[in-house]
Length: 254
Image (cartoon, rainbow, N blue to C red; front, side):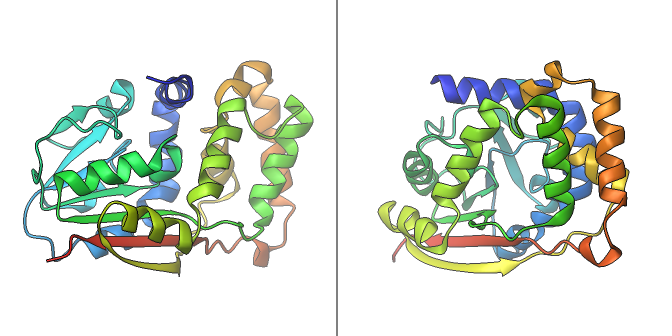
């Protein structure tokens, strides 16, 4: 396992309970819905790659959840779970009807390898990730500003690495190229999701669940209080969150 893979796995493993409670519950359950919709017509087992706590797997009738982190998988309630590296899937060719990843592709140091592996084990590959450049969102900007004041930086080293990887894959062109390079016929589009406002406390808890190593450097109760106050100071119209996402589907040519 490379250093960055180890750092990402360790970061999510340490944050798994909070991430599941806040990020998965308040945000990713909604963001995974367009990807789940794209898999409705699939007949057979879907491999959910980088499944995390299971935001996508819970929306699929028949799936296998795969993640590199054992601790995260422990909080995933999918009946069938496998701990493995997405870039080295431990399955024979054509083992699944489809393989999918909700916000996993932006966590892979070698996304080309991961998509090639997904295409090897299934006829259909479905991906969703954040669109970059990101549309400014005042609540997120407010929380990042408070984190930076408390910690001297807005993101941890691992968080910065994930943001760079997110930028690398966060476009229609990037996902289309990944799917095409894996031998698939790609269909890619930018879509807009809608995430219900979870309240200032809920949003701050979602953002802080991904604080990573910065959590050890901060007075978390004070940081949280300051962040909640900053978000509550925003105008109501600034709270509507409709993030742009990139949805990529790839089918093996017949």
